[in-house]
Amino acid sequence: MRAGLAPAVIGATIVSASVFDERALTRHAAGAADFVGRLEGSSVLGAARRGKFLWLPLSGGTAALTAHLGMSGQLLLRAPDAPAERHERIRLGIQHPRHGELAVVFADQRTFGSLAVDALVADGDELIPSQVSHIARDPLDPAFDDTSFIAAVRRRTSAIKRILLDQTLLSGVGNIYADEALWAARIHPESLGRALSAQAVRRLLSEVRLVLEKALAEGGTSFDAQYVNVNGQAGYFAHSLNAYGRVGQPCPRCGGAIVREAFMNRSSHYCPRCQRAAR
Ligand SMILES: [Zn+2]
Image (tube, rainbow, N blue to C red; front, side):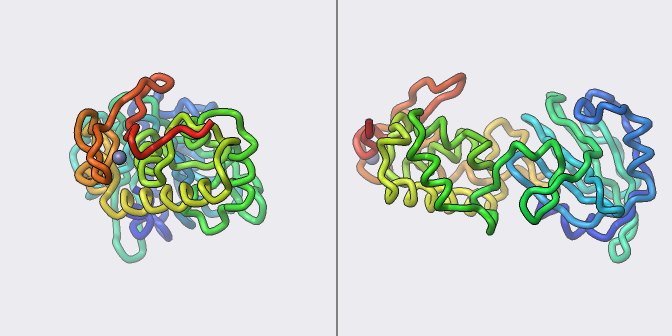
C-alpha cells in the first residue's frame, strides 16, 4: 500500500479533507474539525511504514498524517470525482504537480483502523509519529539491527512464534508470515527463544525477510478478502504458502502432514517432522 501510494502523494498538496465517520479518527483525540484544519493546505513530504502503521510526513516538519490500518483498513487512490467506496470513512482531495487532482480514500469495513495527524518524535536519527514510537523497525528496514535482535531473542524464555509477533522487537510479521518463516527455517513455533542458537535465529531472520519480500512483490495475502493493494486488487501471496492454512496437506519439503495447533487466539501451522521443538 505504501509503495503504491508514494508516487501519487509525495509532493502533493492536500486541498480538502472530508470525514464521514468519526470512528475512523479514534486515534485523533482532537476530533474531526481539528483533523481537517491541520491537513488542508499541507503538503506531503514522504510515505513511510512500520508494521500496520503507514504515515505521510507533512510540510512544516512536525507532524504526519498517520494511518493504523487495523484489520481491514485501506488507503485507496481514486479519481477526484469517483463515487463513494463501500465503507468509505474519510476522503482527502489532493493536488499533485505531475498527476493533477486525485482522491485518497480511507475505507475500513470493521472500523478498527484509524487516521490521525500525529506529532513527529525522534527515533535515533529519524522522525516517526509518536503513536509509532513503541513499534520496532521492520526487518526490511536498512537500519534494522540484526545483532541486537538475535541477542534479544536468545534472552527470551517465551516461544519463538510469540517473539516473532512482538512488535516491540520487530514489526511487519503477522501470523501467516511467522508460520511461513518458521517453516522455511525448520524451527518449531513453540521452540523457546533462549534454546535457539545464534545461527538458527540468523537463519530465521533471513527467512522472515524472504517471506516479506515475496509477499510484498505479490501484493500481500488475501485471506479475508479484505487485503487489497492500493488499486483495490487482492494480493496473490496465498498461492505460494508452504505451511499456513495447509493443515493435512503434505509438507512441500518432506511430505509429512502439516498440522495446526491453537496459538493465542489464532493458529500455528507447521510440519512436525521437519520442525522439531528446541527447549
Ligand atoms: Zn516437513
